[in-house]
Image 1: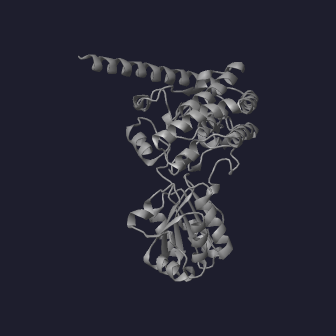
Image 2: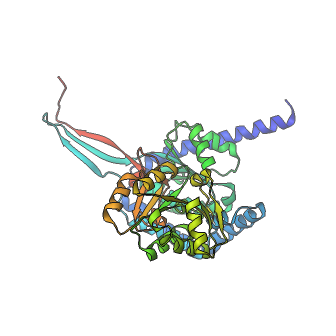
Image 3: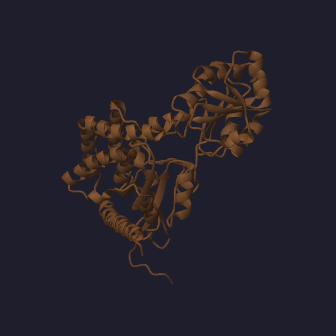
Amino acid sequence: MNASTFIAMTEQNHIDELVTNCAKAALAASRMMANVPAHRKNVALLKLAEMLERRTDELIEANRRDVEAARISGLSDAMIDRLVLDEKRVAKMANGVREVAELPDPVGEQIEKIDRPNGLDIRKIRVPIGVIGIIYESRPNVTIDCAVLCFKSGNACILRGGRESYHSNIALVKCIHEVLEAEGLPIAAVSFIETTERYALHRLLKLSQYVHCIIPRGGEGLIRMVTEEAHMPVIKHYKGVCNAYIDKDADKDMAVRVVTNGKVQRPGVCNALENLVVHQDVVDSVFPYVARDLARHGVELRCDFRSRMALEAFGGFSNLKDASEEDYSEEYLDLKIAVRVVHDLNAAIEFVNSYGSGHSDVIITSDKAAASAFMAGVDSATVYWNASTRFTDGFEFGMGAEIGISTDKLHARGPMGLKELTTYKYVIYGEGQIRG
């Protein structure tokens, strides 16, 4: 064995020990957290919110190191936007923590009660999942969102952030640990894997005896890798290919507002629009005004033949490209949108179900029957009528924060808040009954 191989094996053994010990400690902490009263959890959360505000300058300074490194490494502007912490975003994190503290504690909630003829009293009770591994990229606010939701729902979490937000995450976890320690709660309830070595992730994904589920948040490549390698259940969404359908009865001004907001407000996030579907009856009337507003914000339109004809006839566009078949399945996370003209509502539904990713889709129309048909026919986690897909967010849904947005169909779907981080067990009360 040469020296480099020996060093590599030694480092690998060190990471094995680091990650395994982290998972063992998290499991022990999860068993304690399952029985922590709601008021104790809420006190800790309120103190965390205060600490985040007091340490805003320190958090922004740690984040500055990450942002500078990201720029040097050539990270895209959209990804850097996801990475940046400023006073407004730190304040939003703190407010999110307070909102979670105010929410009802789901642990112990009775979901169902069954009284059997033999006198058995069967109750279905909400309980924590246990240990949740969260793997994410870029956005440091995920550290706080995931930590507080897992904490409030009685779980322990193991956080594995990306290297691009390493210093930001360390500073945030330090705040969390100081609060947990001051409140006499297990620090391992919020664990952070303090290495950027990729092998640590691969090791974590094998520890199904300690970790009960994994939630990956990031690009499609990361999520597919996690899904393929994990030995425990994975709650996921591969990508956010969100669609807006402008129906034949759409209001022009509303279409402009909803589509522009869905594409432009934050193009680098998973609930931003990537496809624009247009009914043929409004391709020469409503659509050009929507396209003009998108162009005014620097959006590149990738058009099919019919939509390009309409815009060229309308005039004034220099940002048009011909759409390829692959464009309609692309998550751009950038100022680009693909356009398809359809002949009726059913074709729009078929397009969304074929090319979308089951994340968030919207119909813009004044026709209630058309809206009902679209919302029933589109198989996505969230479906909107006359509102921006940018609302697909735990904070906007009143969850305080979210741990992710699931496009799975089992266990959880859409923004995942407190209840989605629990499972249940049956508690049965008897008086000596036996089965004959």
